[in-house]
Image (cartoon, rainbow, N blue to C red):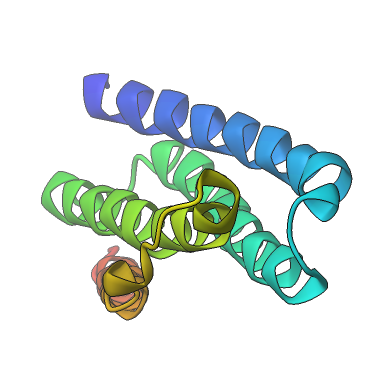
Length: 129
């Protein structure tokens, strides 16, 4: 029960942050960076929201094995942090006046974590009796 509550709260919090970042991307960011950067930022927001919603679903799935559920949770959290987080940083580095281009390799690592999260999710679903 405690794990499910943690997953639900984390999913809802990440969804809230995605909405806030989406609003910033739609209204404030357009004044600071070019359209390509806004598009990249919105990709980070979209993937964060998709996975936040899936976390909320995951937290409601009591039929899943808890070990699988925990792994899926950690893969998605890591994936969101690395994938979306690195995109956010790479876009706002222009605004901050610092170059963060050296962290560009983190984005695909985050994508791999999200993919592994989905693989574990599918495996967990297959194992439901």
